[in-house]
Image (cartoon, rainbow, N blue to C red; front, top):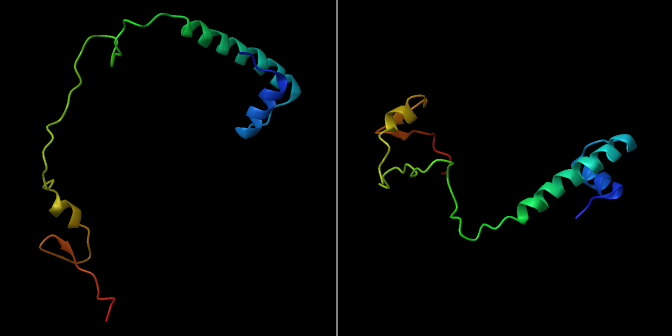
Length: 95
């Protein structure tokens, strides 16, 4: 796959980047180089390789999946103008 000058200008317009004709021609070469490298990566046989989370073998740390109330009700209502039993008190708006 290769990128031409019109494609570079279109991508720049979509990205809301102002590029001159000289800049667009240099970006054309850079983008083609990047796409060539990606095509090289696509040629690598990865059929027997498992996906990794890190470059060193390690297991993901997971938190215990438990439902808690957070024990932060006092912290949450601390800055409220008025609160009672860890609930916000607000003026009545419906009559």
